[in-house]
Image (cartoon, rainbow, N blue to C red; front, side, top):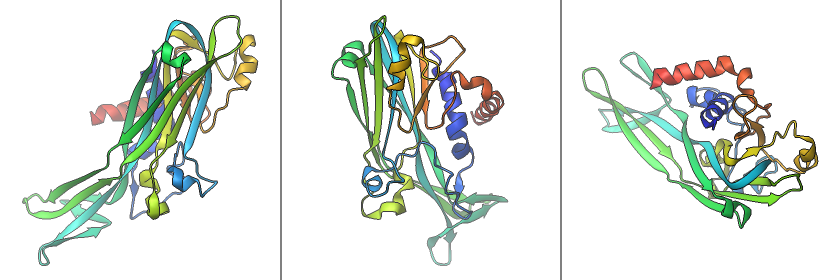
Length: 287
């Protein structure tokens, strides 16, 4: 399995920017900053054709007896980080864009929280009724006091996350082939309700940088970009909406597939070596 390789590619092309450079509230908001893989709440997307609550990938797999699929759904949740200054003469906190503490600036910003959920689908489920999973991500509220070198209270940081709800469906249908083959479909929908707040909370109720990593035991994925002759027509019939599947890992490996909102070629690691090296270096520094 090349799941780790798929994670690195996905983090490089989708997540590295938001993870490493949170949006500062005091700065200029880039409207395209969170655009890749943005699944908005269904009630908000229903009234705006430019928004989408769903994404779907379809691909082909040569399935041997005992075929088993693993589906890894990954996305970012945006939490609001608000910095407050302590006003001792008034006995209260005041929200600020940035607060200096012993020469370091701590800014209010939007921060990404990474989520990764794994689902196993056995052969009986896959070729039968399929799998349907409800995903619930709890909200949260965290408060951290800020003190200077003299241990005097100077402020606090408050982080707020809204709860998220999503649905993931996995199904398969047989396709005409010289040997047993299936068309897999994985469909994701953001079922969080934005409610009356609408666009005011849109970012914090979205699934950001949403993508899928699929791996298979007792089977092999078919290249969607360069399918073998028997699979050309079946590949053309696959419907990919908001996600595009590519093979991941060394050339010749067909057990792992990455579906992202950015169109890549099969085995994309060689295109991203420098970026991957940088990301691994940053992870080592952080961990």
